[in-house]
Amino acid sequence: MNTEEIKQLAKLSSLELDPEETQKVSQELKTIFNLVNQLQAVSTEGVEPLFHPIALIAELNQPLRLDEITESDRRKENMASAPASHQGLYLVPKVIE
Image (cartoon, rainbow, N blue to C red; front, top):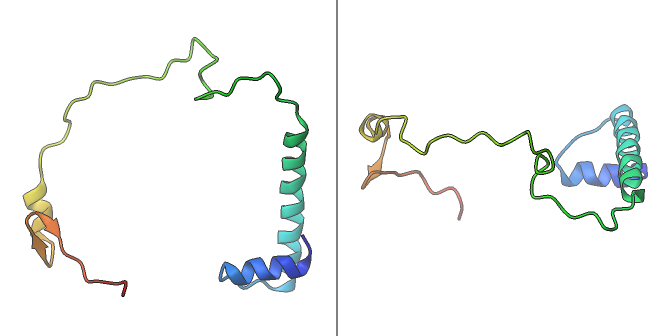
C-alpha cells in the first residue's frame, strides 16, 4: 500500500496520522501482507477443515460444566436504578432518527 492509500484508509477510519505514523503503519501493513502471502503459499490440498483447533488432539478435551443456575434472580434490584422501565425492560432515549 502506498502513502496515499494509507491516508485514505485513515480518513475513512476517522484517524489522524502524522507523516511518521503513516510511515510506521506502512511498514506494519507490509509485514502483515508478507505474512498473509506466506500463509497463502502453503498447500492445503487434501487437508480437511477443522471445526476447532483442538479437534485433532484427542487428549485435550473441552471441559464441560453442568448447565445449572449459579446466580439468583436480581431483576428487581437491577431495575430499581433504571430511570425508566416498562414491563421489566429498560427504556432508553431514541438515538437514531
